[in-house]
Length: 299
Image (cartoon, rainbow, N blue to C red; front, side, top):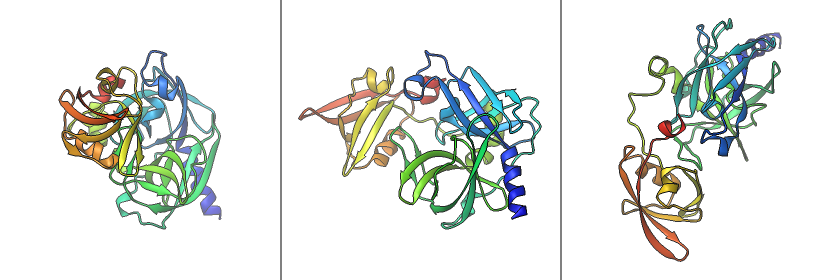
C-alpha cells in the first residue's frame, strides 16, 4: 500500500493543470469555447508537457499550475491533429518527467491508473482496466488505428496520463465515452514518444502526408453516414454541404460506414477536389469540394 501511495504521489507531481484562453475570433471557439481547462503530463526534463490538442488549439495564453500551486507560462510547441495530441513547454519547470511505456505491448485486462487535474493544484486518480485496443473513429474527421479503451471514467480534466503499474505512461486520456465497459478513450503515448524529435523541431509531423479536410461532424448510423454539422468557414460549408445530408459515395465509390468516409477522403491532399454523392431532401446531388487543411484552418 505504501509503495502504491508513493507511486501515485510521483505521478501527480508530474502533472499540471492547463488553463487556456482562446481569442473570440478563433474558429475553434464555436465548438470548444474560449476558456478551457485540461491536464498535462511532464514528459521531458526540459519542461515539455504532453496533453490533448482540443484543450490548447488556438490558445493565445497558456497558464500551467503544478501540485504546489505554482504557475508557469505555457508555450505551445507542437500540434498533431491526426493523433490529437499537443506539446507545450513550461520554462523554469522543475519536475521529474514520466517514463515512457509501450502501449503496443498492452493487453486487454491490464491494470492502469489515470491521474487528472480537477482544477488548480488538485489531482484525482482512478484505477481502471484496458477493455479494448480497437480502432476509434469520432464524429469529427478523426480516427485512431489503435486506441486504449478503459473501464473507468477519467477522474478529471482531459489530457492526463494513463500509466501502467510501474508508472510508465502508456497513453493520454482524451474522451469520456460513457459506453458500457468502455468509459474512457486514451491516445497511445507513442504518438508523441515515437516522433518527439520531429514534433519539437518542426512543430508538427512533417514526415506524414497531409490529409484533406472538409470540416464535417458526421453521425454514424447503420449502413449510412449523416452530416450532423458543418464548421463555419470550412470547405464543407463553403461548397454547400448541409446538416442532414446522407453521404452515399465518395469519388463514386459507395460508402456504408464513417471510417470508409475518412479513408476515402484522406486519399486526397489538401487543395484537391473530392466528389460527394449525397441524399438531400429526397433527391441525390453531386457536390464537388476543394478540400482544406485542418492544421492551416485552426492555426
